Amino acid sequence: MPILSISRNAFDQLHPNRGLSWMQQEVEWFAERSRMLIGYIARHLGSGRDLQTEDWSIAIEGRDERGQFHLIDSHDHLASLDDARTLLEKRMNELLATGLKVFPRRAGVPTR
Image 1 (cartoon, rainbow, N blue to C red):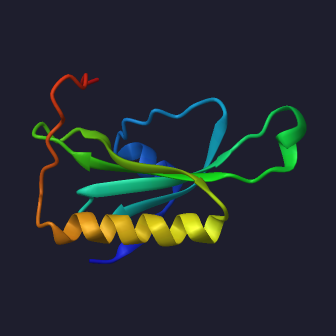
Image 2: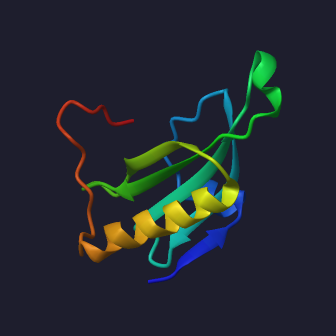
């Protein structure tokens, strides 16, 4: 299934359960066609001497038994936006290949 680039507004309408830190800025948003999986790419905002450093991360969320999104995969410290795009698409496709339609929450992880 193709992974589609979507607008931030379209992403927000899916009610993601982001754990976004004030130290990062989301820059691109994605969804699998059936909206079973969504993801975003964020740029870490440097501090002090590292203001010019670009450090990227990805987050992928899947729907639980109640249809709510929760984080199921993430990766930090990616060197470039292209690396982040490549990894996000690869990981979303790997998750889709499992055949799962529901991604249960792990025990002890709070729901919103």
